[in-house]
Image (cartoon, rainbow, N blue to C red; front, side, top):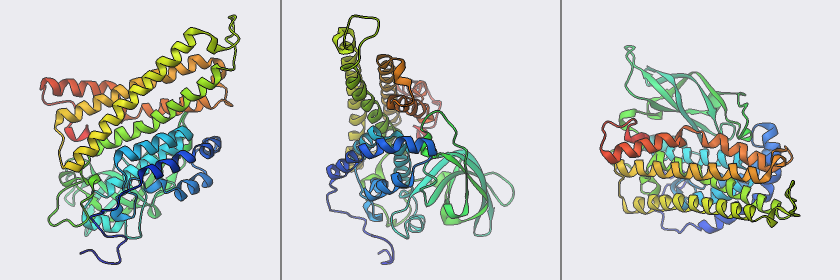
Length: 408
């Protein structure tokens, strides 16, 4: 049995999570987040008011297992909540998704590591794997140094999950990329996030300089996340059996879908009140071609939602049943994600054409959603060309594939 001093140490949680109530709370934040979005962007990080509202709503612990004080939502429920937050502000949604997902990944580690991460209750973990830092082996652990850019959520985090190369005492390098956990109190955040979109995420650079990390705070490549250690106690939640990168990738797309859906709502309101310049139409909505395009864009986003949540339901169902994914099934899921990327990208471009040049005015929220989604779609997890090639190679049995299955 776990020590009573640990926070909420129960593995088997029989209570039903009221996911609809959590989703409703996220939906209720939309007007506030839309107002704060301009300030978040100007600050290039979440405002204190935004962070406080998200904490009060329980947004940062939606996907943390209940054994560590989180809500323990299904991945489908969590992504429904992220769709709603994305309609309000994609920068806030991005930070939430990163922190929720990376914290969940921390719950897939060894008993000793979980006990350290969550010793004081629900914790927040940010993370970057690439470029890897250096972890030099010393007695009892490692001395870690490195710079990790694009560290979304670092201003809100308690811990940093950092990719590292391990240098053994004999100066040999251990194969693979390993992960170390660093307390944010022992690292420095360098203000480096100057981009055209997602400016409000505060995705700055985290720097470690010779920080000591004990052995149990390192996840080795050969015994990675979800490793079945003997008599493991802190395990049993359905989320312990989800495919890691596939869950992170599809969850990331949920908020982008929400942002695109909000863009559609904005343009629908626009076309019923503005004239179509250069024509005799008093309103854009008088033009059949405009109405046609609205319908087509809506259908594209409907299809993106169907593909995304069909995959997410499979994640939940198969995790609950304890079923594992084959390589071709994982690459199929990655290709599904590529389909969603394409549908979202096509839709937001067409929306901006309907909005015309005024859609790019800084006073028009359309341009912020458009910029934020464009940046997010370029994340390495979403590169559609790679997704399709992986799926094609796995379908035809062309081995080895271009990425190891663990990277799907």
